[in-house]
Image (cartoon, rainbow, N blue to C red):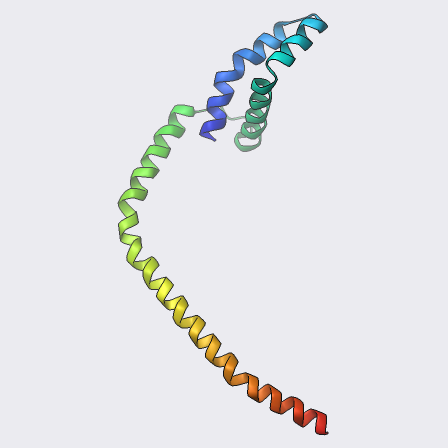
Length: 119
């Protein structure tokens, strides 16, 4: 959302300039020459409208929160690395157990099918 907020604030003057043009041909010419910028502006406005529900754009606060969360992540990441490695080992064990159970059940399933066919 930070990127959308930056795009919105950066391109708002282009949109305002478009709205100030009253003559149709000049307006169309301006739209054509600034098509990419206006598309970015409209996309940013749509996304912000959906996510903010009319609240003001607090770009500075968002950047501060992002920096804070990034710092917290950097601090907590080393603590989670051993846990991630343990989860990987446990999943490998789980897969090995599942494979062994499937191999054990396959002969029993074949015997049941043979028994059912004999009846």
